[in-house]
Amino acid sequence: MTRFLQRLAAPAVLATGLGLVTGLATGLATVLSPSPALAQATPSLMEFRWDNTKDYRKLYYFMSETARLKWSEYYLLLRPKDRQTAILKLTIALPKYFNVKIDPKQVKLCYMKEGGMLARTKCESVIPATIEIAADGTAIEIFPDTPVPDLKTIGVYMNLMNPFDAGMYQFNALAQAPGEVPISGYLGSWLIQIDPAVGN
Image 1 (tube, rainbow, N blue to C red):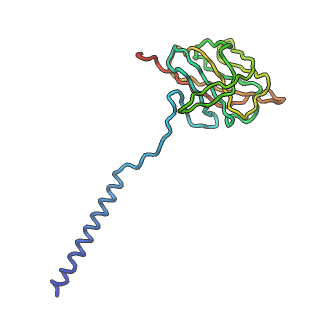
Image 2 (image 1 turned 30 degrees about the vertical axis):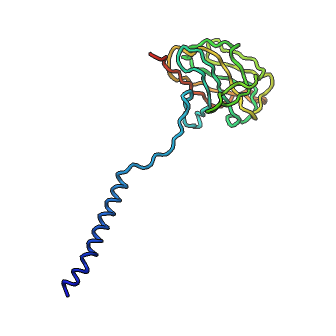
Image 3 (image 1 turned 135 degrees about the horizontal axis):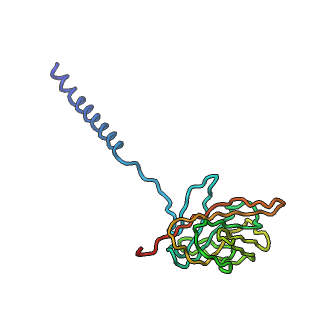
């Protein structure tokens, strides 16, 4: 009788042992295997983006050429979601070390068409405006002939030679809305990337 019970119990013990080993192997595999990677959006080579905070808001831009000392077309965009009111005056504050001579004749305020994979960003129509460059080169001031509503994507087009020094340059957008108080509010920033020339 004892042998009979031992014969019955042996498969059960074996099955239990195998189940325990299988469970341990599965648990160990779960711990050692990496978790699946989440999809990440990769920004264009022409654009660098930071996360938004209350003191910094990213703005979209496009450049035709990012290498230093190369002529480039800049498209600095302001989408409807980037502004809450019409714009009476737009100021682009430039860092002092952005050592570039800007010709006001090569700066335009436009209604923009935002590009993508199949189409390039472009100026669809020019918005009549007066363009002034600060004497020290640290600001571009744009005075539209009439306030520009926040219904369509607008932007500043510039054709200029990239600076000598490679690196990042933060351009800040400040806008003045129609009203009695002439105060310009911060809209966001374009973080411009200038790359070393090929072979340097």
